[in-house]
Image (cartoon, rainbow, N blue to C red; front, side, top):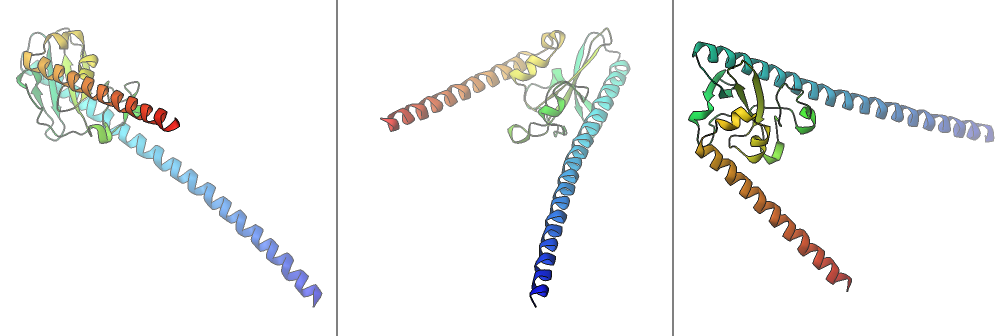
Length: 202
């Protein structure tokens, strides 16, 4: 009887070790699968955005040549219709639905072929492409939102900045004023919470 109990105990110990090992292997496999899946999603986003930039630049070059343009021009690319809008004709919101997929870290070095952030997530969502073509044939692409901001101004080439209309410059100024106001507001909140913490300590 004692031998049977000892045998059962040793078998249950082995079974427990076996279950723990199976669980550990399953956890490792699941984490590898998850990381691989995340990398696959990132690669897919990058590939789609790269193709979008390539298509936008091709359409912009063709349009520039067909329109017999002289001097530089900036176009906003509509991915849904594979069409362009001359940026100089847009003073307010750009009426194009955003289509950028990659996030900030995924396009830190313009991996998509265009500078900027293709998708700002909760802070602005999917962005659109602005493609500039200069008279010497150089092409510059950047991701931007439906409204021009100070960040967009920083990403523009000097030639593109020179082409901005008064209304577009005012839009950028309004954006900068808004951002400065938000920064001041956040600083005041931080100062207030710091003062509250100091008074709580006393």
